[in-house]
Image (cartoon, rainbow, N blue to C red):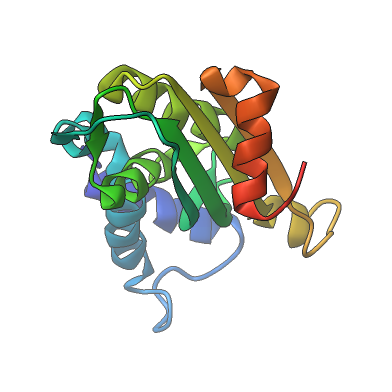
Length: 186
């Protein structure tokens, strides 16, 4: 649970630490605004993907299910700056499927935590494997990191791509199909 009072105190100290007057008109309510914002953008700390992945539907066959272009926003745990992009999530059902919106909700649960992209990718894949028990899972994230674009190396537009393959998707044949459906070829 986010402790709003502690966040407010920390933001006030931060403002003072950078040489600002935390009591001036434009900043006076900033600690409260940041605390409310953190409650929203870090809400995944209080959520489990199981909530979204527990209701399934029976299905025959094992055709690939792919949800692509799922927008996500997260916060880099190293600099507390945003990173954002698109997630592409596929799985091979083994007798059961989940509503497609639940794939996006699973991405969101893990994105709404202090994160690194590599862990985020793996957490999504592992949650799908654990809760859906499919034949395989493939997750690809493409993201722009503000810690790379507005500070440090300052390379706007650069994208970081991470992949996680589990089960059948560790085979080149299924990976090729995944990339073909994404429209990226091989």
